[in-house]
Length: 419
Ligand code: HAM
Image 1 (cartoon, rainbow, N blue to C red):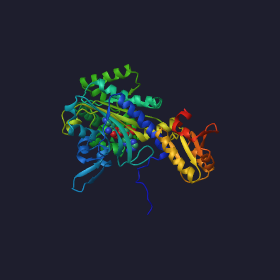
Image 2: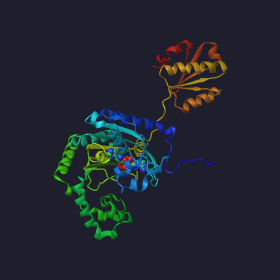
Image 3: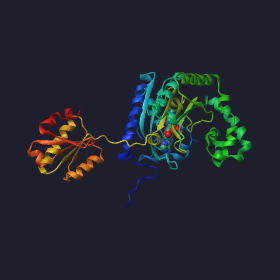
Image 4: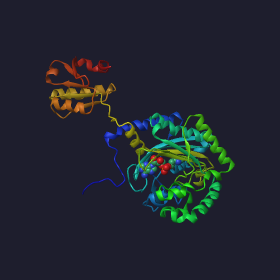
């Protein structure tokens, strides 16, 4: 039997993980700076929350979900995204009754049966945030500002572009949909097969088709912005005003419609030109009817999610230097007695807060020093039989290649020797 991971699923290996930790930590800090608390929701949910929440005609529901029967016959689905699950938890835990505004963030693996390619996986990680209870444009602007801060804090803001749009209310979209069908129907032959199908099922999605031959026709299509009601228009104008006020660069792209049906009014995407076709690193928007649609109280909400694999790919391109595990001390000992001392010393140093690797393999000092170099240890402690007899240890500064001897009694204060 040849073991192999499932197509579209990948491991995050030890040599990659430091960059992941660095980025996840930065995101957490920003979420908390904006007053968001973490929520952990299950990976499996009842299928209904996705079919009724995300929309039957969305790509996710129609062809990408990992859905199967539980042992009792219930249909369950591996979460393809985080919003619907967070909304389910918001409703189930009556969060709206406990607090008028709830700000939640999450991190974890999502599952979509898409065609895998660079930046697009079947199992991928998102970090996202959802804010419940406010319909104000100030809330939209604050959320967009939080997304932007993550990229600024990571010094990636020069490599991403923020695009915003408003898709209005469902009434606005109904009028626009009619207009779109009138526009596309006579030119149907210029559209790809996928768009032809969308003309019947979800004409708005034609607008974000990327197929070259469709682009000219799409370019001249009517704009949703001409169909917005007064309230939606004012809401959008206010967001633009606020983003300008807080110096967040954006462009309005009336072609952004998003692939999930729950959005109302504000939608936005953060894209980069550094990742090829999978260029969206984060996206989100307002969804004022989803909570009610899933059986909860009428609650406005807005949020976004960042694709962590894509964020990491972008970060690696901009900052190619390796992110390494921080090893302070390598303890090299040789001979039974010295090895016994080595494990003892290692534990004392760990209690002093240091990251310590202990060479327990009875290898020569030469190969232990090689290992210390490889893992980038700052110092190596060397103890052989000779050092033990004299009650000393050698401390090698790996960068300067300098060695000094100290009494073994000084191990109790070791941290002061190197600080
Ligand atoms: P989404 O646009 O479907 O939105 O996904 C958000 C981000 O997840 C994308 O911009 C992308 O970076 C990443 N992503 C999506 N699919 C894949 C994939 N197959 N492989 C790698 N990365 C991927 C949502 O999921 C919404 N729940 C966002 C949201 C939250 N809206 C409101 N609140």
